[in-house]
Image 1: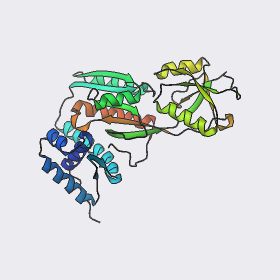
Image 2 (image 1 turned 30 degrees about the vertical axis):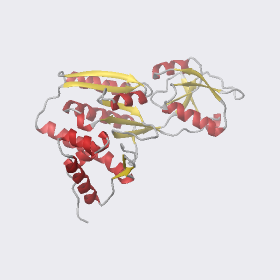
Image 3 (image 1 turned 45 degrees about the vertical axis):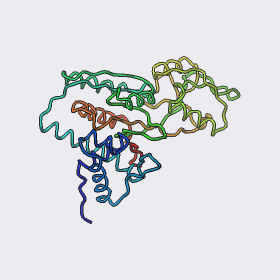
Image 4 (image 1 turned 45 degrees about the horizontal axis):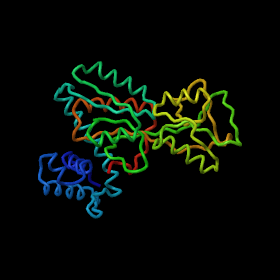
Length: 299
């Protein structure tokens, strides 16, 4: 079988069509004509012998093979642009707007960002912390450049890389469970992926529950659990010394894995942004398990 090389100009056009929602907008962003972008998509499909895009009414959607390629395309373009920036000796400068989730412990990422800021004096960083779904809304509205966020089950536009964490049930070490009463939950607000997994697991087990405490940030959630206000879902990294875990023996079944993703709009990210992305990916690789490659790319 002969080796096939995927030209980066075709991949860049492909990612632009995905991110911008069509050939015309991608053409405007790349300084090409709409027919030229259409020809590039046709050429890419011919190279791979695969249908990548399909029309559903007036909406352009990725096929399953298109979804798989999108994730690889983003990684290949990131490596290409990083190599060009390094070899041409471009210095990092400008403003970067970064979104970090309050529903996932990111202290190790904050350290990476602080280290990056110390090394890149010409880069101005602006950090926004919020629930994952709100950060992604800001990214889509061009109000953030780079986002770390929990992945929802639905489409994940602009996803570049993802990792997995297994949530665990946690309570205060001296907390007494009353099996006759509804489980008191300490949670993030509605829409949080941890909250969804807790309630789904308890419903599947046939256990009643109630929301005892709601807080948007991980620190507030940890303090509430330590104070004995209820049960929550954490990861091993966010479990505190004054807490203990619960398992199926206590009536708390295993929860579905959490997926954490790194997102950015490739065609709009600066050289400084690519450098920071590289640092964040390295930190996440150290802290979490890379998610298996599957068709979960941006649509």
